Image 1 (cartoon, one colour):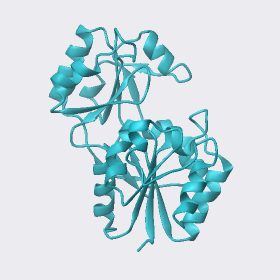
Image 2 (cartoon, rainbow, N blue to C red; image 1 turned 135 degrees about the vertical axis):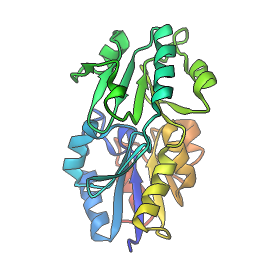
Image 3 (spheres, helix red, strand yellow; image 1 turned 60 degrees about the vertical axis):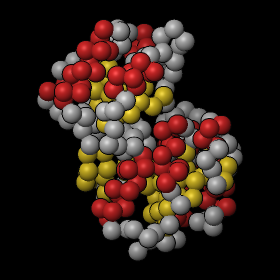
Image 4 (cartoon, one colour; image 1 turned 120 degrees about the vertical axis):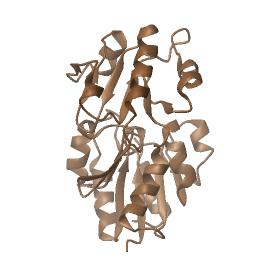
Length: 259
């Protein structure tokens, strides 16, 4: 049995400023956790294809991705919560009526239903294929719904009014909403991971900074929020550490005697 389990968000938390790299200090901290018989787990809104560098650098093989929709242990997927096809079809029709592209995601792929200035900004460093019927050929566990955080264009309230009983919508990007089945969030991902591996009873610690981290921060035994986190997220913290650029991960782990 592990002494504890630590769940790490990536963007704004374990990642450095460029959203793609993990600092040497944080890598060393993860190695110290393992040496102390503490299990590090990534708990992110991104899909697996998007975090390959983080997985390689940290050596973390236990991953909750796509806001709890996909769960891996030892690099093997053990749970996936796909969005039902009828829901995807309905969302696609609603999005098309409002000229909002969708990005359909599974663990390894991202397929666009359309292209506009917001998809170009989101994926300017990544080649993303166009395939509006991808959901017919692969299970879709997360969708990026491209309604930008611009007053006259942000339709999050409208999407939630229509699909709120079937889908979660999280604003983690200025260009799009993370969209997953109502059955999945970072807290359910943590619970399912623990239950599947028989780890109930191990103390749990969660690090995060954004709105999609709220479920897991509320459910973990100990909630650590980054200094750069949103005010509403800090309100849920047992401890507010320094920012992700100022050694917040190491500080938070030391605060609780984990390293």
